[in-house]
Structure formats: C-alpha cells, structure tokens
Length: 209
Image (cartoon, rainbow, N blue to C red; front, side, top):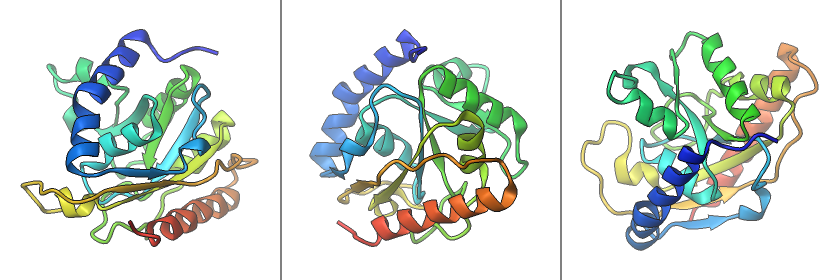
C-alpha cells in the first residue's frame, strides 16, 4: 500500500509533539475515547461534527495519524497552497458538489491518508449534525474504505461560529467503531448510510465530557 508522503509525515509529527500535544493536552485538557477504533496504516474516512475552526487540529491529534481535509478553495493562495497541501489539505468549492474535491479525496485515500470530512460541510452553533451531506458516503462507496464516525465536544466554546478570540475550555473526542462502506453509489443507499453516520455522531456527542 502507498504511504502518506514523507514530508507530510514529518510535518505531522513535528506539529503534534512540539505544538498540538502541549496545547491540546495541557491547556484544553483533551480527552479521547475509542482510539482503538482507528486503523493506523490503512485508508479510512473520518466523519465528524463541526462547531469550530479548532476542530481540524483536534481531530488530527485525537486519531494519532495524518489526516487530509477538504478546505475551502479561497485558502489556497500563491504562498499558502504548498503548505496546505503538505498538511494534506485539498481545495473544494463549497456548495457546488465539486467533482475535483471527490477526485482529490480518492487520490488521498489511494496514498494511504485518512480523509477527514465534516459531515454537515459547515459549522453548527450547537455542535450537532442536522443536515448531513452525502459526500462522505459517496467517497467511501467509490474507494471501498470504512467510515469512522467521530464526535468532537467542546470546541464551540473555544472558537465557535462568529467568535474571534479563543478561550480555554475542555475538549472531548469520542470515536465510534468503523462502518463498512456503502455497497453502491445509489442515492437512497448513500442517504441511509449518511443518516447512520449522523445518528452515531450525535449520540456520541450527547455523551458530553
């Protein structure tokens, strides 16, 4: 199996041990449950709720492996593009069903990445999933990889939607068991799986701290 590029693995490890661990464990008292559900060396899709821009580093740190994310294309400027791509990010046009983002997700999975997808596609004020999108299920069906549902609790208190300045607050990540990919790309089947992801994430989220 193809591995995550060496440069990305080096950047991930440096970021985790020099910055993310001291910040998340020391300041935000991060607790993670269910790490045993995350395969360490096979491609997977991580689906999660989304309440804060803080969610990306929290999720990556919690699963203990490099994670590639869809990111809005406006972030990919002339100077930032190479940095973001080293971290595994790839651009997506929000709200357009961007085929390029799906293709990039499949390429990242083929390289051995875990691909992180926020199931609703945008932040929600209460942190729960209300209107899940079908993209994660579609990519899982095409790539034939498992999906791991994850709930991130507490980040909305740190830097939620509409907030400018972060503040300390405890964070908890709960990781569910891997789910088999949809058996086809039929819309009804994708919808059924997507609703299952949302239900599990919300149940995990409601467990709180």
